[in-house]
Image 1 (cartoon, rainbow, N blue to C red):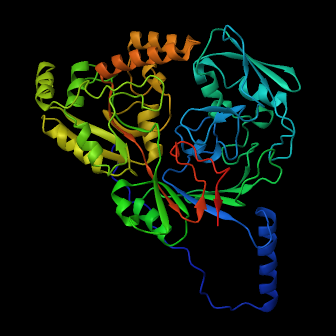
Image 2 (cartoon, rainbow, N blue to C red; image 1 turned 180 degrees about the horizontal axis):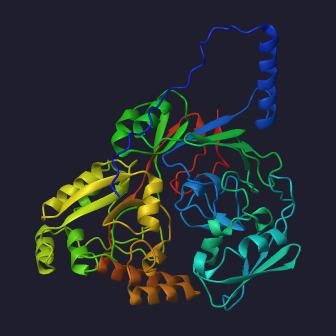
Image 3 (cartoon, rainbow, N blue to C red; image 1 turned 90 degrees about the vertical axis):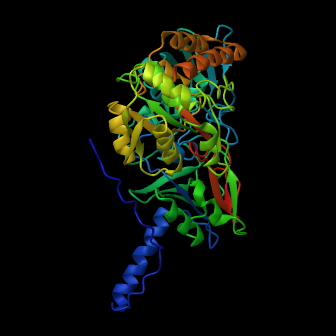
Length: 509
């Protein structure tokens, strides 16, 4: 299915209406009363000192169902702010796990099969319902299954304050899964109505989703922990970088995450903003459809990888990138420098393509249409130098999810994998890569079953080495996005913000 490049929405500065007053005083009074009633009902009040924060993001969720929406856009807004789990990710890290709705990290049995959690008391959902052990059981039992997270778990209520999770075999990813979307606790475990709404236990409660524009969260007055420092937070969506720049300069947003690299110069020397590079596990990935000819031949995949100059790609990102040779970034367990594996070598690439009988390839690269094109332009140019014709097919992100992620209908795919610790995708033949290596699957399974973190990292390292050699993808760079932050804002997270934006400690003057 072909699709032309859709035109991005244009940015229009929000201004006060200048329509002359032509209504009678009675109607005007009624209108004022209605507006006052609306704000009284829908926003927190703190006298004349209401604090409102507006954050610009690139990608809008396709659904608010944090359990089932593919990609990271839903969790980026709702996890930590609205939804919480027994454990979470420390806001200053990629993968440091901390207790949240549990009072402390779990007691783990010596064999690694049982995790016992003590629950916080005095926690309520935004609906007003009390958080209970029954909510934990009802939420986690259907989530922790082999189909959803790769393993089955039995979740039982020990008493009103204690829950136990039992595994058939050790699984080193359990806490990681509990800290993500699979681990969020829902009232009664129910997901009914949560495609367009949200009900959690976090410091903010969901107020409104204006599709195509914004999601608004309000400070939750009944929050069990330290209260939020802003009264209202609005996430606005800017798939087009110029619109985000205009909104920042006009004061319509206070922060924008992941500013396109070519636009950094817009804020150099601007005393009203700070530019902060966020450490991340984001990997811009050029994936080959290994289940489809000619990419089922590893020589073709290796040749395409050798045709691409990783150093030049990093240089094109104005400092917002780090070279990478495997799916594992330096911030994750199992990292090893594999940039020389299938490294840049156009002559060897041409020879491998000839050996594979594929000297005149014509390919399509399917990509979401909101990315900066510099890297893709460079990739297509470098592929052309080894005799490969590649055209880019830009699509809306929901189309990418349908065609590439769900239906595996693509040659090559260019997308940012923002999730940390996702090596398991390469051990899953059913994932959209179509990559199937039994040795990688064995090593990954052994890493999951390991109860020793050092041994786990070694197994992941070994698996990454095999994956790098097989080249199911070219890992173009580890993306370290620039966040542009108004100097009025304090405490905005500087790590992992393309996956999660926790606003719990953020304030604005």
